[in-house]
Length: 388
Image (cartoon, rainbow, N blue to C red; front, side, top):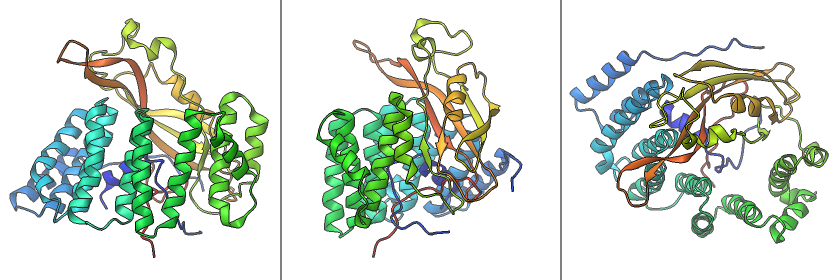
């Protein structure tokens, strides 16, 4: 599985791993292969007419290097070139081609190309279905990614439609674990649409359940409600929801709560012209890499910018959000660390009465986990594993 695919998966909060395996401080170092070596590797692959899967792996390795160096334009260019060469091979190589579209969607989201990212996200599933006609864990993961994308775009109808289709396919495949997770996503969506409706009462009931058969639903409800209560300022009730969640003995640290990134009015509305340090035409090179430690009690220390693009004048709300996080407590006395990429961007679209692309007047922050795979503190990419 290529490295950029793993990075892409790390931001997909909607997917799940139904049967997780149970299970010193380290110096924070950012490492990576030289871009010239990655480019030479891709060129050598193409010269020998390498098979599509090797082309895709080499292309994504190079794209990842460009992305980590902050050159999003070049990252997307290498991915687009590989898409052009390999999309016709989705029937023979469905997983590599779907990886390609997954990474394409990631870069497009960080660049503010939301419509393109939406199309690429749907292409993940289309590529899998072209070569793997019977739905399995790979299709279900892709469907959850589509649901997450629709929810991020605030398309409740689209998210509900995709969840219904996911549930039908999972029931047909006998994946009751996937159905349960999809049902909880439905419940969360219903709550977000109408917080004082039946969904809220059902979540409260599930959160109070001690039935072992409802353990997943109970924990999911507690996590969701704890975030809602904390955002309302009801800290005591939020902590009460988390109190019964067991401490972790594994090397992964589940994020329980993160304060919303509160962009100031001046930052959120860049159309006001108050950001002279930023290129408001394309938000070029507006990224930061933030490192922080997670204490055994789940609180954060030492959040700091370790690398950045041309400007980081927008970053204080991001740092404030990270410092206010709560992770699951751990029985390991040593702290763990995280390294994360944040990009300041805004959606690109066409304005009414014009065919020219332009930035939305509302800015946002995109996120990507860069923590080395299998290092302490790393939340492993969560995907749906093969069922029985």
